[in-house]
Length: 378
Image (cartoon, rainbow, N blue to C red; front, side, top):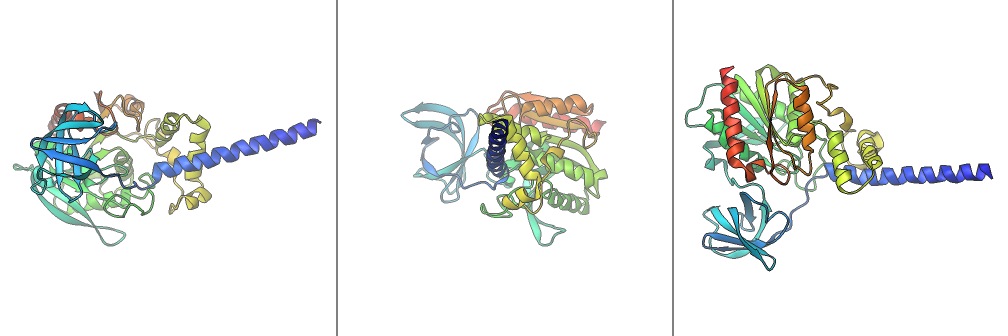
């Protein structure tokens, strides 16, 4: 009888382990998978207003963008009215091809449709170590300070347009801005392309952007990184051949401890903590990496700059992060600052992930320009 109980218990444990691994694999896939195409919804432009179906995103306060089906872009501001499943927002800006019309479009946090809206810009080709080139936008301020560059790195499932939101502040401070793309993002590969390696391979393309900036005369570089872009920036800071040119970091809603991000995702889905552990295991195992179509396993637990496992970041660092971020926990930024004397945290009370400039643009821009001026004065 004891033997049968032991066998039954063993079978139950094995089943639980199998279930945990299966669900953990699903969570891991959701974390690293390329972004699927967003569903286009009806959009009606009427004079100085835009009407769009009500959703959790479209009723958020602040400024956002809508990419229309013909490629045009409109930026919307305050919510003016909401009822019967429709929300009416103020029209802030529209590209020339967006007239009064009924069409379809995709909601986005990207309210700047072109680098030309920020300053004098050119599209440049960054030579890549692995071959070919990657497009980047180079934006020069009216009164550029020679040799001072910022490199803007977007996050997972995003593109250069998302990182454009940090360029007005850096350009206003007199720094040349380079907004880069990297392997696996919306531009370098289509939606059905390879999954993200959480920065462990993507950082090489940012290293190439650093080399490009140096070749163009950059003597002091600040990395401005969003979400997973922070992981990329921190990895580049560890291994770049020109890391001595990097004089500071500006991190927006940064992923500085991936085990915490994965645990937060499973908690939000009301899954047990064992699933988070399983997801991390799947990411880091050769069999899991093959199942997830990764080029190699990703040790997500090691992507941790909070408790000293990867060494202390000694550069001046500015973090801008909302306490209510649902994706990357604010606690990670708070703990990072607590363990890094050169780091400063500006807290926001915005909703959503990486919506700090969308909902509090004045604080966002002021924090960056003020910090850059103090950095120069050091």
